[in-house]
Length: 63
Image (cartoon, rainbow, N blue to C red; front, side):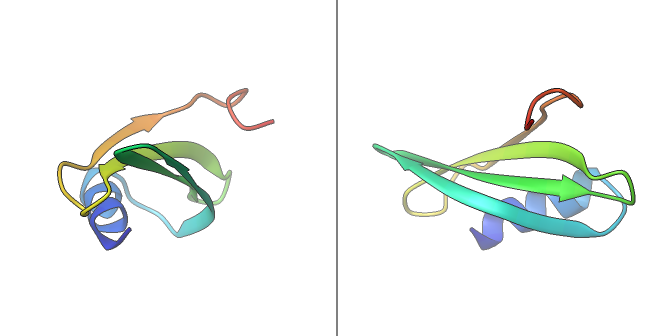
């Protein structure tokens, strides 16, 4: 999941906190919160760590 952390750090600013992972077939997701307000983000990455993609989940996205 290092690829997810690096990708998100490159696209955002603020402290990053990993909330938890979720494996699903060939891709895995890593849920993170960024900054003082805990903005929820998700990163999807290949099982081998390739092709990480990140997206903001919105403030209602993680409960």
